[in-house]
Image 1: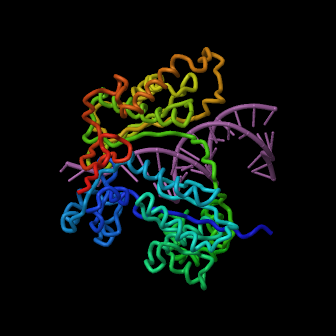
Image 2: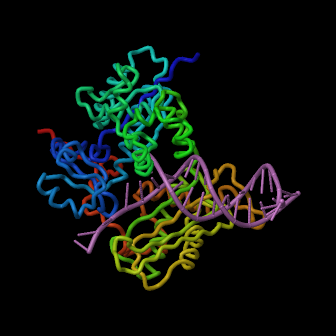
Image 3: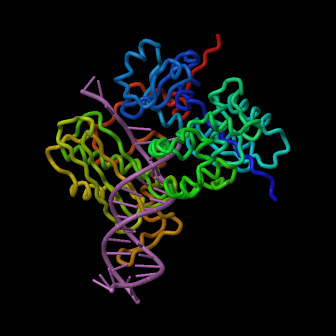
Length: 427
DNA sequence: TCTGGGGTCCTAGGACCC
DNA sequence: TCTGGGGTCCTAGGACCC
């Protein structure tokens, strides 16, 4: 028998809010809130903001009074900063285990199976090191499966006396622990399943774990069954130490104000293609198709609503921004209807394949490797990388960009832009 | 006035083929 | 009383995650 697996789930506390705090010491004890794109909804809250009763996911304009009353510091989201801070945290974590899965921007699983240390003490050490090296506080849950490590992590966050670390296997009464976990807090059980389970009288993780497995499989398909088995301590979800190749890359944004003219919509679509194509090239991928979609504002009752999407195959797999913009604009012209007030548009690149193993077309001449198009994109990326995004861009993206999202409260790019680097004065 | 964005997986059902 | 069956591919819809 192989030794029982021990996984650690390391999760950054209030990640985006914590990133903002790192560079502004005076925020240490103040409620900090980060808003979604367009300064729309609350998407991250520091512990103080949670204590002040600022709700997750609420539209910012409905929270204004709460923000004022609690003297909250409010930020637009700054993904450049969060992405860079995330990389620092992950790099630190990688020192503590050879097997690491970066699960999201603020979470990673570490394999601690067979470590010759006390895993709880080791986890405390990981936590302190990440805190000291990056300024980001983390919590760590330990368990024999990913799902149980997640459960332990959630509990570690709730109970301050645990000092940020909980080992599920060390709990004297695991049933009692699982009974404290509402079923909708279990990883893999969302709102819909929670409502269905509620109708069956299932409210906590223990009750769900003990349901007949046939019932779970029937109502929640294979994924639900895996979740249940993992709660029983049977691993069903492997640690994925190598990130799987992406299957699609998307970019979409709400507009700061309604878009009526197709000219503006073309600019937006071209801009989103630019973003997505950049990311695709960074991952050394090519797309075979592009989907474009547009949508009016569904929140406004009584206004005529319209939403549509369409797809076009690209003649050859490509990561060339101009080629994809051309195709995307043709798609847009098929679905755009005049007379609506559009709120949102997006594009998705799909049928991705690796640059190294591309399929050639029978009909089109094979683009020579390192041909003009590819060289142009390389130069474009290099310039934008060095001098900042959109230093060089495509005319189709427009100049004015009236529709562009609002980010009135964005913090500086402290760690990725020389102009924004902190100055420290020693007095 | 103001309501996020980017992903994945699973299943059912239809089209099509032999 | 009768209706073929099995495999594959694609799409739409529904669920989930952070």
